[in-house]
Each structure stands twice: as structure tokens, then as C-alpha cells.
Amino acid sequence: MGTIEKLITRFDLQEHPEGGYFKETYRSEGTIPEAVFPDVFEGSRNYCTGIYFLLTSDTFSAFHRIRQDEMWHFYQGSPLTIHMISPDGTYSKQVVGLDFENGALPQFTVPKEYWFAAEVNQPDSYSFVGCTVSPGFDFRDFELATKENLINLFPEHKEVITRLTRG
Image 1: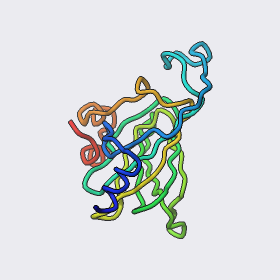
Image 2: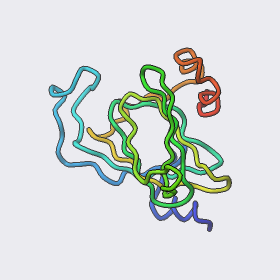
Image 3: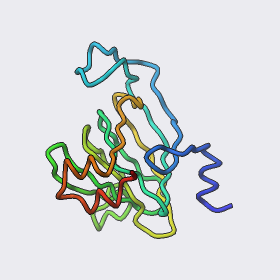
Image 4: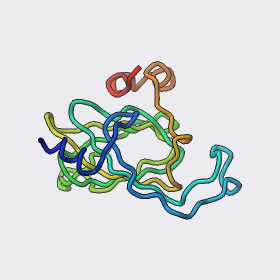
């Protein structure tokens, strides 16, 4: 059994709708009531959630967005690149990994409402990371982009959108 299969088995990872594999590892007991949030949130949320996330070089984490900030933590494997498009259409990217001399960061936060996607930097490899979301993640806050809709919003980023979306 290879490293990828061992990680999937050891951590009981399941396929994620955006691509890759995940396992929720933490969900705080405490919750924040819906009344405290802006109207974009439906229902209460846990204070914080955390997952393991495994991405392989034969796929990608497709462009999506959530209503909260999402912090990525690098554990092992290849560095990965997070591609982001801000609500005003500004494109940026960040390598998450351990090559500090070349600008990689071991921890990086994607701001709320940014469209973002990720891909493994080295061929025939994987990236094993963790993601922390606060207030806690809920699939009601998750929106997976379609190629057509995202290109209509940001035609200047057609190349990266086409490469990192499905459908």
C-alpha cells in the first residue's frame, strides 16, 4: 500500500465534493447563535471546525468559496498552490509548504468570500494538510463554482478558472 492509500486508511478520509479527501477532526462544542451573524448565515455555527485534507497530483481542489476565513496548515508531501480570486476580481496565489526561502508558508488563511482552488505542485505526489474554519464550517456556507459562471464573473482569469473547475 502506498503513502496515499495509507493516509486515506489511517485517517478514514472520504472523498470531498471539491476534490481530494477529508475527515473532520474537530467541531467545537460551543455554538454561536444565528442572531449574532450577518444575514448571509442561516442557523447557528460551532465556534470552530477542523479537517484533515489530502490532495493528490492527479486531481485538484476546484474553485469554491465559503462565508468564513479558512486557515490551511501544511503537514507533509508536496507543497500545494492555493489560487484565489477576491470578490473584486483580484487574482493571487500562495504556496503552502516548507520551502520558506522561496516564499512558501506552512500556514495560510484564505479570506472569507474569496473563490479559491488548490493543486499539488509536484507530479506523482500528494499534499496532506489541515484546514481550520471559524466560525465553524457548515455545507450551507459552501458554494462550488461552475466554469461558466466563474468565467462570466471574471473573464480575465479564464485560463486558471478553466483548469481548476469541473462542469
